[in-house]
Length: 155
Image 1: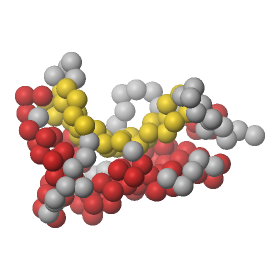
Image 2: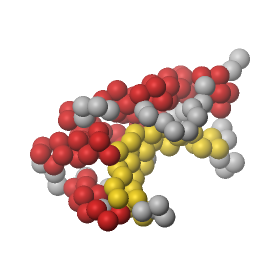
Image 3: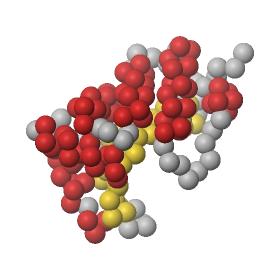
């Protein structure tokens, strides 16, 4: 990661608490054995007219990619199990409002690097449910039953 001070990390954690999101997504994939892919994402949002803080955050963390959306918003996204783990370990001491989600995603990042066996999928299921419960969501959430099927955990 880039060069960062404790003040920088505290500022970035505050930005994440206010204008960011932590996500666990399950994507269908035809090119994998299980037919799915789990994605962990840290995302920061800002009006494109005021995107400079996102560029600064990317520079300080030394990771992520910037995308400008058609609706006038800019996003800084950080994906990948190891990358998300590294960033959240650094930010967690300063995260206040999204601490529960951050801990669930951090645990997921650690275990997903070890494989995708049934016990890992069960832990991911629980993490998804924790994050869903804590996040504000405009879209419908998948139920436990839906997630059990998707993660191939039904008897």
